Image 1 (cartoon, helix red, strand yellow):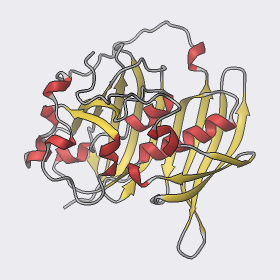
Image 2 (cartoon, helix red, strand yellow):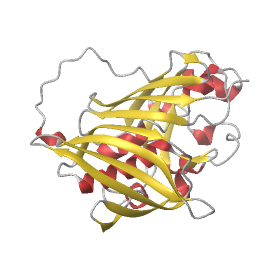
Image 3 (cartoon, one colour):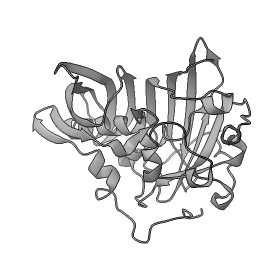
Image 4 (cartoon, helix red, strand yellow):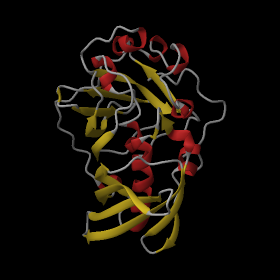
Amino acid sequence: MPEAASAPAVRATIGDSEFDRDTAVTRRAPGVYDLDLSAGWTIINAVNGGYLLAVLGRALADALPHPDPFTISAHYLTASQPGPAVVRTETVRTGRTLSTGQASLLQFDEEGNEVERIRVLASYGDLDSLPDDVRTTAKPPAIPPMEQCFGPEDGPAPVDGSSAITDRLMLKLDPSTLGWALGQPSGKGEMRGWFGLADGRDHDPLSLLLAVDALPPTAFELGLKGWVPTVELTVHVRSRPAPGPLRVSITTRNLAGGFLEEDAEVWDSADRLVAQSRQLARVRLG
């Protein structure tokens, strides 16, 4: 697989990267974690949902006896803001191969009232303990070589609002899903591209939680504009990813009543399907 077109001279490592620092949590008491949501992961008017899920995922990895998220479902209740936050976790059940927990991310409003932003239920295990047997009909997405794809730096003016997250990503999108950037959306509800972190950090299960929600919304290719807030997002992590860039494919088949689904697949450099997700998102029509 090709290397990132603008790979950094010195690559960050897992545990010592901007992503790790910005998703770090500090245990204040058993099950209670303090953190600071970075403004560096905002897009348009909000903190990115995949980044937020990675923050909660890191807290649960500390709270539960197993290290890796296997499945994690999040309901986004109110819009998160950059700044201080608290994660509260609860262990629901522990077993030999899986443990289940729940977590909530909370912030304070202008009146000092505690507001719940996200609530998560997740099951954790050990990806390294899984058998190697794979039986699948799934195939990696057909994406042109990275040098034939385009990133935010190649396009016209960014969408209105913050685009800080794009500075932290290596994103190269399939030209066939970029009609929206030229004012000619395809109407197909598809988005595909190469994905990595700008500092060259390789991927792990937590960064997969970011990857499923880091591409532009499929709503753009349906001819819609503006913020597409996530209502619910479920991610299945299937394998620890191999080093190198990821390929992400997202599709929407049904937009109805101002809501759409996004189904994502994430493939690693060894042609393995390492994560899948589905989210329900709200769109502004008209």
